[in-house]
Length: 230
Image (cartoon, rainbow, N blue to C red):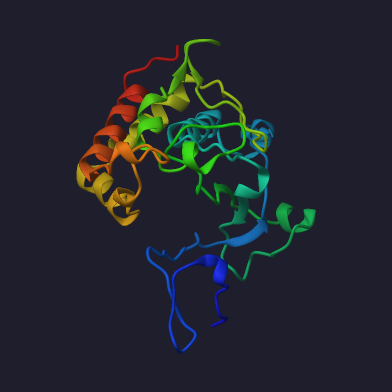
């Protein structure tokens, strides 16, 4: 295993190993990579009649980005994979590889700057694991209509205050409603959110509890469940 550079921090041991706490291991979704980037604008070009995802599913993904306050929506944060068996899938960015895939699947690859408030330059303090900012940011904006997601485009972003259909709202609401309190709690416990201030940058804000994060999640879920986008 290669040695980690000093810039990652942690505690350097005599044998050259570096102890990092907290540290996480990423487990990627199985699939053959077809593209390591896609713009959110590309979702609107998907043709349901040609076998693509229906608008309800695409709108639900956009609304999920709003829910998370996924501010850094540049193409490199998303990827396209093929869910065909490895033997049948061909890796690569070539049009032939993509065209030969019978089960293409788009996903968000990196959500490192989330659970805060979207900002122009994707600032870590405001936009990443900021309970105070996340709570204060409503799901919906009233400025442009009843069902416009409150996610202004950042400098690098490709998603800007998406219009959400009722079908899309219902689809995501149904999925979020399946999450139990224990599952939500596990999400935040494994993320060690209690190690970050309620309002990063303000030492007086103190450290939140897991219960606070769970209640914030449920409150924002309710904003989606109780809305109507007719």
